[in-house]
Image (cartoon, rainbow, N blue to C red; front, side):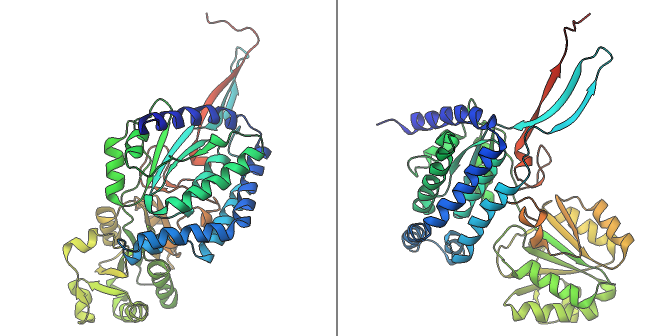
Length: 418
């Protein structure tokens, strides 16, 4: 039996070969493969749900409820997975786009044209929906992908990859466009991170420890984000009903995800009115509130916020609240304590909104909208493979277009270098 190192090297070699075929395939063929993936997934609904239940039973003895929630494929999540595949299939083709072009005085025609990155390695925890999202984004952008999901989702992911490979092969494309290791051994991750000969970029999805480990061990460039310390600033002129609704949705729609609200900032001139209403709405949703000293003077029963609260991604039903002295103070707090993920303002003042958009240094900056909207679907991008808080290559949601690079194409008629 081949060693894990040998297996991963073979997977990398196969991915590189498959990527060259896929990158040259017509857009219609790649679209049909993704549509076939959605059809196969729909037809195998019962088998997928059964495999996921097996994963849940195996994980129940050692995993907490938050982890099990991320692992579970509910009917809603299953429908989401199918819909995301179909959305990805319908997206405009990101390949072969002339990004710029000109003709030199010599007659040389010079163009910069979008092409796939090549081979993507994705390392992630728990959520099986990442498996289908990642495959859809990879196919749409002409990239082969190596998927290494968490061992807890091994049964779910193995079946999902098999279904997707079947759909890909039916379109005459190499099934190795989508691959995963043959066993859940962690050594497969270490070997994947050494495949710099075959893999062009690594995308880790999970907690900070996973991302730091991947970044420190990888020989391959990494697209990453460490934290989702997301803020919402309620300006003094904010519409009260909107302020309450956006705060509750940003925090409570799903507390365990990276674009959920973690710190609420309220302008001092509106705090007396807005803070009690917002706190009532959040407590009705079971959220624990931790307030600064100024907040506690208005609401003495708030739990005191410690300095560490301003730098914490809870991923839980906990929210830190601070009263600030105007727009400048809010922006300063966000740029100091934020993680560059998603931050928003609630205001009717166009000038304040413009300044907030310009000065907050985050991948997504929103005006009068829930932080939960900072994802691929709500940006019209369809499926994404993560949200990057870095600055190199991709920033914000990473969809098909973000997984392309470019090449220079030059046409001449015999020109020589003088």
